[in-house]
Length: 170
Image 1 (tube, rainbow, N blue to C red):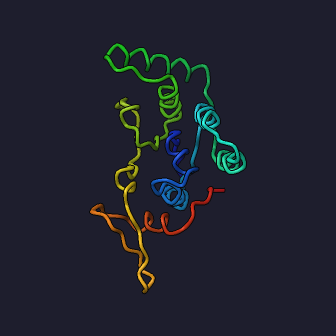
Image 2 (cartoon, rainbow, N blue to C red; image 1 turned 180 degrees about the vertical axis):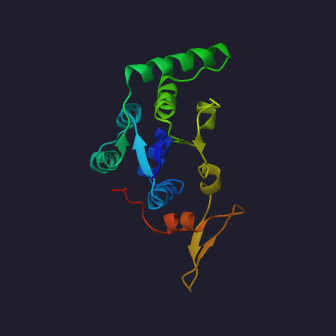
């Protein structure tokens, strides 16, 4: 069983039922993986929390393993930010901290924001991109078959995600 650290964008997409993220996360769990977050994710999620979303948000975050930000991880994050800034690439404190958590715990990061995480030593898991799912139109034929109206190929799990309402993983 592998632990996978989620980027905050993936958490937001899941909570908002976007881009087939819920189905993809469910697939990862079914494959025996454990999903994780860190305190930075929790801070970012609660900073964007809207009224009425508290219960669903808390249930999902409570279902994740929470990897800590230790003083050593904070130091590593600061060094990552400094080193990348010297290369002309300014990274946010939140992103370098999430990267440092993944690196320190030797776990992959699930994100679609690769440009925010340019560190070659960081393992990034592939994630279906927003462009692959954002503009699709789905219809159901009289036979019950799902039909996509797009030039983008879709996987079965993406189609299931659009055909059924997104539920928090508990």
